[in-house]
Length: 100
Image 1 (tube, rainbow, N blue to C red):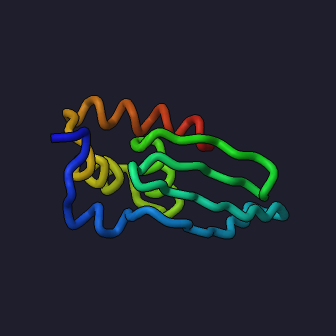
Image 2: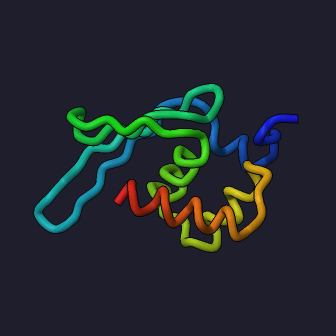
């Protein structure tokens, strides 16, 4: 069995391209999250900056862009990946810091 297993949650987080418009004060950003078949992906910001993501970072980016609160995001990650809660919380915090 691999790192992640098929769940109902994974049905929501499927390979494809997700597009978001973010407004922060006077600043507007166009964000694209591309998720590949293995759930790795790329975060593309204003077509000028690309961040390559491993599967867990892609899931964190998705949860952040979908505006999951931290508890929901940790539960989401737990349904996708086999890891204990402390590891999921640490991975979430690390990836969130890099995404911000």
